[in-house]
Length: 193
Image (cartoon, rainbow, N blue to C red; front, top):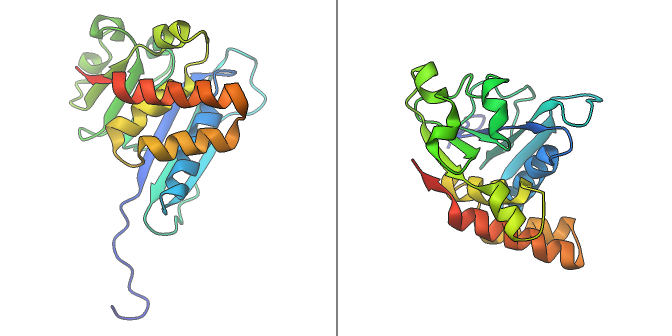
């Protein structure tokens, strides 16, 4: 390859939507760390300031096989991950999501999506995972690592093992075990509608 010529980048961009306190920034950082563990380049960053607990917030992640030179918000994500379905009627979560995009929502059935896809006339692929129920069944209220596992499954950008490794590097002891289990269950329980 001639000097100075770069191969076209195939950056994978994700936008996370949730509420302050739900762990969306942690999830974006864990996704990026898992990508780095897989030998990729990654970024993760928030789009919020000192938000009040419970306020709608978003975070972003980018993954590529080469250094990432973009330093802006994600405007046309490959995937959008929504931690709480109530945000669907409050925040334009699918803005910029292309027809080839992946829409991952914490919901138990498609009727809970409030017609988001139809209202936008969109053809992106929608995936559901009942993260709230899974978390409750595992004795937790936190859905972030379940959603992370679901994203890992649908994106194929990072594998479950890398996500679990990132979780175990971030947390220790029983908390690490629980969150690794949540990644595993989210990875397994996500389904396309």
